[in-house]
Length: 330
Ligand code: BT5
Image (tube, rainbow, N blue to C red; front, side):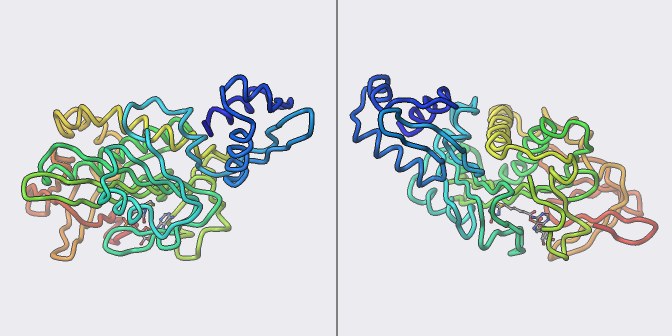
């Protein structure tokens, strides 16, 4: 009902819509209208009310609110339930609680501000308020746990496709295994958390952080050289709900083919949008560091490298850095 009232107010903008008319159109009482208007105001919508004239929507809040995302969605399951929080420690952590309490496939947790945003290996994800997207999607794929790692790359494709829709003229690349780079700098990261039994996934939580309208002066010194945002690169502010809806739409488009065939149908796209293909890289994980030239991505989402000896090695997880004239960069 919340969203129906909002829709009516938006249609009427910049005119007033009488309370009586709202009651008539939606078949609800005046006190119900009043209650919903109160809730919308609490979410940050500025709604003016004038006796004998009704309600007028003056301002939509600058936040990735469900009421703004939902009307733009074309999905049937992903994002059909969205929980919004003004602030949370980490959407992946909040999503895990929802998943353990039985949240359905496709449920999304989104926030404006993370106080303990996480990267992989307990690293931090810089998550200030008012500018970016931080969301986590709960998925329940009927697959064995070994198929989960390839989902980070699939999500990378979805995020890249969505970003291309807002920044078509920029160079947007996927850096294996979980980053989106624009013009050579990190703009988005993906964090997958899995809960599984031996042969089935209980839930997969896919966290996505995108620097959307972050200004360069608001980047912390440690990220000045390596990070960017869609706004910094395009010079344009981007509507966060629209980007969120595009990411969820793109992810749902990719999901069914991935369930049936894994990454195979997407390998060409993964290769042509890869930041690392044909580059000399150094890939490290807690067990080892391997150096070589990237020859591709396997259907399981591993990075394949040709080492100095000419042998091909595949790597399932790690941090890749590009080697430039013998020095390691990124
Ligand atoms: C990632 O980890 O890139 C995964 C980031 C996932 C963030 C989302 S936000 C919603 C959900 N909830 C969470 O708590 N997390 C997910 P990793 O590959 O480990 O990269 C982390 C590194 O990226 C840090 O050590 C920094 O160097 C850099 N970094 C941190 N914040 C950044 C930012 N906002 N933009 C660009 N780079 C950043």
